[in-house]
Length: 197
Ligand SMILES: Cc1cc2nc3c(=O)[nH]c(=O)nc-3n(C[C@H](O)[C@H](O)[C@H](O)COP(=O)(O)O)c2cc1C
Image (cartoon, rainbow, N blue to C red; front, top):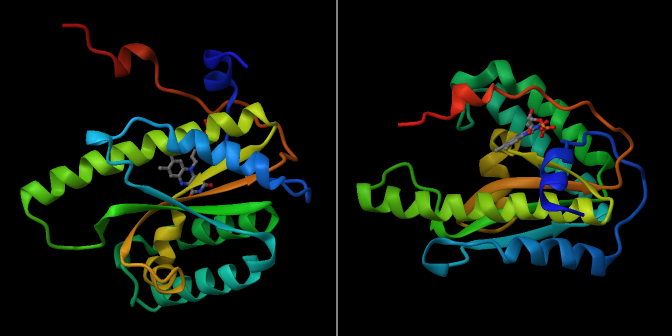
């Protein structure tokens, strides 16, 4: 598949067929993630793959996270209006063939940072964004659909404990064979995002 065709053809997929993804296909997709550029070549990513048989356990953890958010004990007390949408995202994971958590191996989750730590973290998070986009595009090559997910932040502390890590969980990606073919979501016009000096 041509690169621009893949970039233009990718969609967020929220409905999946029940079909499994072969392990070697998954490895190739994640290997594309690991080929992303990274700040100082630190390669600050780790991909944790949750197979279908651990999904109900994972969803239990996510739902208990949502309960913590609802009772004001989570990290996002000012975002309660988005809890319903996070619940819907978690339901999508029930259908996906696998969920992949992407961790930042260079930073832990800290609410207090110096400017240096913040800038170091920004480099790592950009690198991980590049890795995630590589994963989404490589998935297309194998006919696999994907959804990039940050609603996991509504279960952040519960997921840290379940994954037994003190590293930042940057995102999750749901992967599976698509059961929908969504229309493209609108984009801002180019002149709104490019400034020629
Ligand atoms: C950082 C990031 C976080 C996202 N988190 C979610 C999410 O939690 N749930 C969801 O349904 N979609 C999520 N999305 C998908 C966006 O909604 C989607 O990319 C956007 O609406 C554009 O649609 P498209 O991907 O089909 O082009 C996320 C995308 C990004 C890049």
